[in-house]
Image (tube, rainbow, N blue to C red):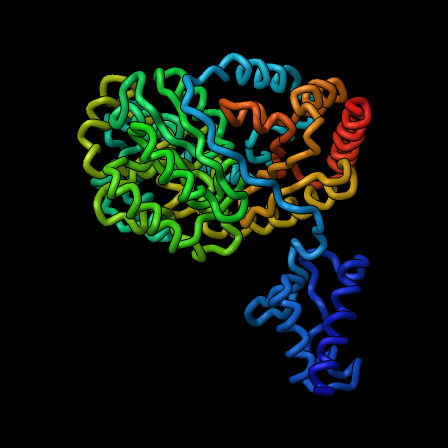
Length: 477
């Protein structure tokens, strides 16, 4: 019993040091041996204390390295509440989304915390330039010719290799290269739905899907999504029983904007439900390779045994948004997808397909991913702590397990569209919550792009947004 009390005291002391900022997020805490010598206790007692702190989420063990302060250890703000199911509706957000995006892009000097675009510092520009130069110099005839659907075979082979990490076993012949993830999603929707059909989505959902749904004349029913566990299966089942849903659009790994990750068992339950209802699933896995714990979570497609899931992704969030190279695995819809693509965009740009294939073969892509994951983990922590420090009391923030986007839910009387306008006047862009839903339920929320490196200017920008939010809250009373 004495030892039990002693390890609890050691654990509490270290937890207090972390809370006071003695040890910052991501920093190494004293080794078991060092702590044992300092306190004059056994290795076993310190190990017991560290195990307790790990269970509580204060520290994390890294193999052959030691124990480090968990990024979330100093976060006390709650996570956002889950939304609600509302009746299906025709999408009407297009003009508002276009307006918000146009305002955000009006000046290059704006601190771009709104658009989910990786900062140039985190893109492998030099290697990409080298591989572009190589393919245009040595393969110019092919690089400057048409390249029809399904795309460049060496690139499809490299994508098939990458998809093994997502738990998906496909061969190159099953992959179609697209002009980014947006074209992949559009093709998937066009082969599974027709104008007037009803599509289920996560809620909140990436605004680009709402624009796409409006373009294709689709109606949408939004399914509440938990910031930690993903799509609410009970709500989905209720919606499937109540309305004639033709497809489900969702993300199992790092949804946008919530960053939710769906556990394996819940993914399997979802697939079973969709199998019973004979409804296809369109999976957007664009952030999947930015999971901090690489390999810990598989894509939904990994558990698909009946061709239910059309898998869509791209290199926009990892390599470069400008290369416009995405792909989809359409299963039984592949022939229809390739026929449709042939008479629209043919396929993605030949030059960039060849350059990306060359880079994936020889460019150190995995090393690049390890670097950006570590940077984004640090950035997210800095932004989360800034929200906690500067924003109004009762503000809620997500705890993403990867990627670089953060969802913030402010006290309900704050209008995030007005906050967006005021922030732009100060040279800062944010993405207001109303563009992530066809309903009004997220108008007090916002999404932040945390790929902007954390510097004094970024801290100042976050302080400004927090001050404006507090001002709006005060004015509402």
